[in-house]
Each structure stands twice: as structure tokens, then as C-alpha cells.
Image (cartoon, rainbow, N blue to C red):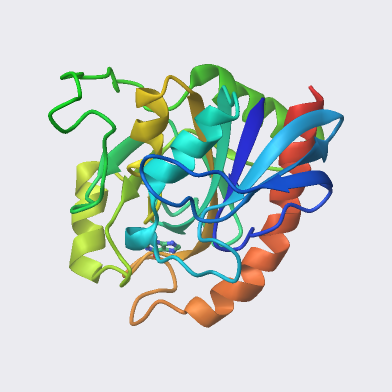
Length: 245
Ligand code: HPA
């Protein structure tokens, strides 16, 4: 079973022929919303809106453990995660897509592991390559088939939010090697690894990050809304083509 986790501009999945919805309870609390099951490009998929319906959960308030555990409980082996980002790499202009291959984690205070507490074993999962090579290739092939341009690789920096970054913070992220910045990539990717699920991210650039491109004085998030509407059409095409392969 394949799961698609939709970000802030994708709380529903266009083209998904919905069969049913299911509320899943977990030992970690409530997932962001009920899981939606359906058919996309002839494949059974389960869709989860990361922020809930009507954008209720801010990035730092999302119960990532409950979300990933709920998917695992439904026999999900593969997770395609959609997330909006700010572009740091100048090739990542608003509206562009990227399939990152590395991660930097600047988040704090989030419940970021299943392996804690007196009952839990001490486990150190390997995270050298945070994204699944197979799933990344699947997204890249899907993008090619759909005729949609997507950057192959790049480092995703995850910040705590919910505020956007300062120009100096973005300059530091760039020096650290970041190409894009978002607020939801972690601990999601690591929790998927802890549960032994393949995970890849399709990042959608909503805006230039603070101090980059046209975001010199200020990040224009109102313009980001319109950009994301168009970009989501490309995302839906990439997802359908990836699943059809
Ligand atoms: N920073 C962090 N997260 C984001 C941004 C940004 O500029 N744009 C979209 N998600």
C-alpha cells in the first residue's frame, strides 16, 4: 500500500476515486485527520492531509508519530510526502518542484522518535540517506513521463516555524548546504525510517526564502497562494504518472 501525505496546499488529492475514510486511533494520540482510501492511476492509495482538514495543525503542532503510526497500521510500505518549501537555491523559483536527496534538521521540541520511554529498546536507525532511492526514482520517472520539470536532488532544511526565517538564518542554512527550507520534513522522514517505511519527498517551492530572489525585503506569502494553486496541478500529474509506472 502507498500513502500520500499532502501538505498545506494539498488537503485533498485531485483524481483520487475515494472508496472510504477511516479514523485510526494510535498509542501516540490522534492523527491529523481520518485516512482517505481510494484509487489513483489504478493503484490503491491512502491519503493523509498533514495539517488536517481546513489547515488546523501548524507544523510544530502536527502529531507526526500518530500520522506515521496510523499509516503503518494500514500496511503502508511506501510514503510519498508533499511539502511546500522556500527556495534557497536560485534555480528553485516559486512554482518549481524538487525531489530532495538530503536533509538538515533544525527543529526542536517535537516528538521525534518511537524509541523512548522505559518500555522501549534503545535503537539508532541508520539515516545516512534519509530518502528512499527507489521512491525518489519513481517520482523522477513520473515527472519525466508527465512532462513536468523537477530538480533531482537537493538538501531540504527543516525549520521549526511557524514563523518564517530571518535573512541571516537563511544565509546560514545556505552555508550549511541547504537548497530549500520547509517546516514539516522532520521528524516525518525519520519516523518513517523508524517504522521501516520507504519515504520520499516532493517539494513544491511556494516562495523564495527570506533574503533570496525577490524575497529581499520581505517574503510575499500572499503571492505564494496563487503560485501553489498552479504548482499543485503539476504535483497531481507527477503523482498519477509515478503511480501508473
Ligand atoms: N520557510 C520555511 N518553510 C516554508 C517556506 C519558507 O520560506 N515557504 C514554504 N514553506
